[in-house]
Amino acid sequence: MQPKDFDRWNEQKKKLHARGSGIFFHEREIWWCSLGVNVGYEQDGKNDLYERPVLVVKKFNRDVLWALPLTRSDKKNRYYFPVTVGEQGSAVVLSQLRLVSSKRLQRHLHKLPKGQFKKILTAVQQFFPKS
Image (cartoon, rainbow, N blue to C red; front, side):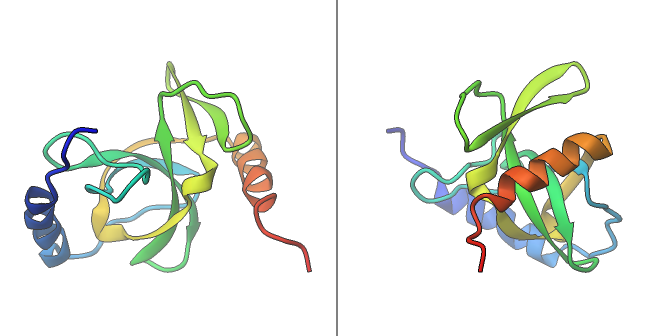
């Protein structure tokens, strides 16, 4: 396993934290998001901004959201939900739902159709026990 550059990510994270808010985002949108360098098998971001595409699953307010990262990996199991983003095939990583600050959002990429988004929400709900 290649060593991770946590120190460089920490410097970028400080810049994100100091950034003003005011990013307008909505559920169903896919954004490039600075997810950073993470521990173990958590999805890492790529390039200088440590970003990867994420799907906005739930907007709680203008500052925080639940996000699901996307990957180009073509895995066929219950933890990956295939989506088409523009002309590209991707998959939403259902097992990596996380709360993120809107300060991490970088650039809007796409908006999923309502029907596809509803199917993803149903797929996520399978991981929550029914009471």
